[in-house]
Image (cartoon, rainbow over all chains, first blue to last red; front, side, top):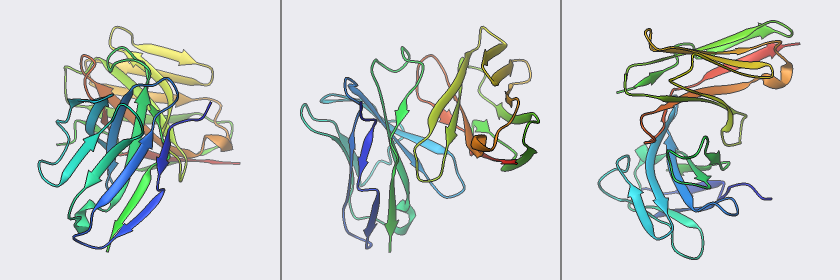
Length: 116
Length: 111
């Protein structure tokens, strides 16, 4: 039973380019969460999605960031026109039931984004 | 604003001794607390949790203590083993909403 998968593991972009981060949840999980970990900081919640729905995006920056979790395929976190401050580790987590009903979230290995 | 704080960035403990990792929070609405463990180049892994209706939860070598009046929780690992060396994050949530994570404590268990 494969865990949460994220790709790429490492992504390098130049300022102004777009970054696309993918997350495949654990089998049977339909709830996905994205977190960002800046250097020397803890994980910060960004967005919570179910299939085809954004449930809570209160942690998402208002501009340049978007997320989706289509009916088929992985969840995508998209960052347009990246800036140096976007350099961070981005973690995806999944759970089998809705947030608040599940004890835990299962995390992927993360994507480390470096913006040159 | 950091609602969950881990004030010790690092901790070293001798193998076999007790490791105590601390976490403080500011939001009195938090009612669920978790500890995650993270190895380098991996995602965090759930370790143990506690609901605010309890003050202690134990799972093998790991025990989490919650002091609501002090808004403080701690993770005790006894006996500590070299494989416990990792970064430990505490997290909290209120009424099933988003998790707030601390900045982590890097534990090194010395053989």
